Image (cartoon, rainbow over all chains, first blue to last red; front, side, top):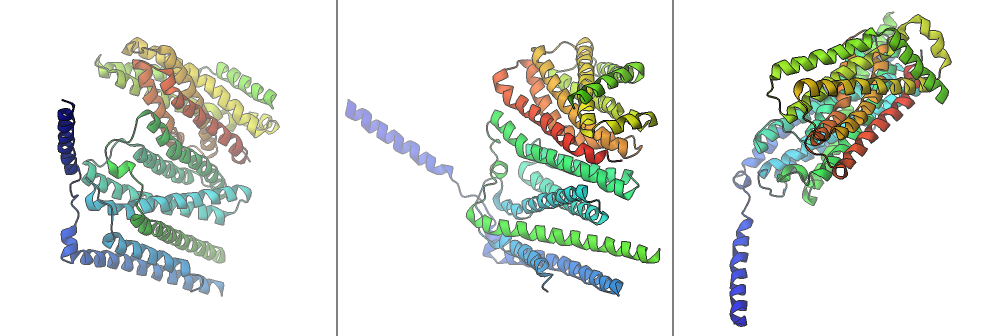
Length: 73
Length: 222
Length: 218
């Protein structure tokens, strides 16, 4: 009798644990974009936007520096 | 180049965060999927904002000891750039929220703290606008800045912890309660914070120099 | 210094009693807004709404009340007396006076709300304790901001704009906790919030104590 119970309990736990394995499904990510290389387009575009803005900041900085030099004369 | 290294560093760090922000590995969370990368931009701007607002308060404290309009200018411009970052952070946050949680605004402690911060600093600018005399303006706005900043820190720091002690957890959304970055994200995140702070300081610096040039011109004309 | 503080408190009470219009005006404001709420809600008011309305009316009444704190100061007659008093004593005295003032208004508001909008409080004493702590916090922040506004000129909207954002943390905590006072209050659960509210009030008083001297310098 005791053996039967142990056997049934073991089978039950095996069954339950197999359902638990279904609790970590693969979370979708943008692997499609990565796999066909298009992610690099995104990176390049955002980088370009940022570089243009930085160039603008640099030009403002230069103009201010020039004005400051002139003002000191 | 010696004096400008930090500006170049700021740009390079942000560029680094853009490139590796998109290409690097990130942990995979349900609900968030790839949008977790928004952390590199939205949250880094918040951090930079806090640093800039902190700078503003430090200048305000300096001003109370030494009433100098240049110090007041520095305090004001740091706060302005802080507000620009706050607005950018708010809008990016709202867009992120709409896509991940379905609403632009939710009743959450961090969002409340953000609203309080922005309103406090908008009030700071209204206060400055109401006073005509420059020295008085400097002094009053410095006093308000210090008072408001401390209250803001108390609010942002203490209240969320307090409400957590009564309401267990932040609900089931991993994207909000879980600002624990894994080590991959940390390598992009912290440099990005430094980068945004440096660029923020640079913008502030440009505005300060611009205003000082105007003052100099007014002086030489008068 | 304690003597100076008590003198200031007494003086403010005397002044207020002489020109009773301002306190009556604030009480009337509370009455009219409460009645307005009654008309608009027309007996469909829930406990949460009662609670929310109460704090909104209270905040605006408090701002009105506290703003008048420094209006006397603009008057030339008081200039001499103010040079004799330490600024720290002045701000503490004013804050204390405003605390009592706001408490009176708060209790009046509570009575009116019970009268017009129904007696919804299951634990009225808890609510009153909460109200007292809230008034302390409000008084601390509002007195200081009233000082700033008084020095900053005549913009009438300025005190409200400056003070309301600073009050958000307190209002948030107060309204969350007072809903529980209305529906069944447990002291042990809510003690942390009460402590935090007291802490907020304390921090505000400390800050205003330290900063007021700089404000008052001319």
